[in-house]
Picture 1 (cartoon, one colour):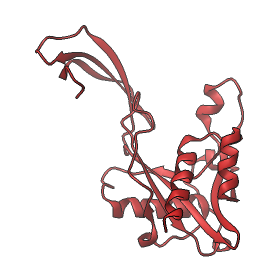
Picture 2 (picture 1 turned 135 degrees about the vertical axis):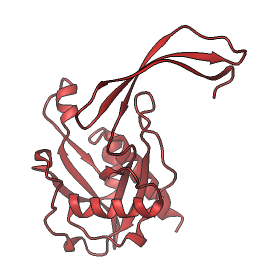
Picture 3 (picture 1 turned 30 degrees about the horizontal axis):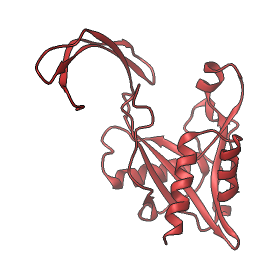
Picture 4 (picture 1 turned 30 degrees about the vertical axis):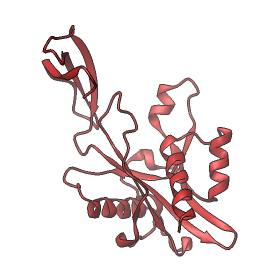
Length: 213
């Protein structure tokens, strides 16, 4: 807790949006100062996900004679289409997925990453070869308590991929997979051609991880 603040007094705690993929939790709070006095009342909206709070971010990579390639996935993201004025566009990202309730230890993280690799990229990974890429991080702490768990796995043969099964969602349709040189991918982020934060961070962590091997 920050200096001078020792807790919260909850005035009310309610769900104002539920029944779908996400829920909106509306809190009315007062901060409790270190001396026991209270601030004025404030309202805070928090986004929650009932099926699971955290997510995995997976970089699959392949070593080639002149460098390293990484697997990226291009697809439409509905919030970007409807939430920004540019309208229909695609996002280029690494494979990612939700850790469901009860998937709490690293073995569960590895299994979820392997499941997402098969679902989104048609690749079969050996769970024991999936490695951490540094500690988990909060991507949007101003609205959600979600953490991203960054992991990576070497792919021996990119050509072994089968047609991805997908998750049954219509929003998976039209997704495109591409293997791209790691340095070129990072250069595209620097130019603004790609703009997914978790993917840039994951690729930078992979580059650092491989450099110390």
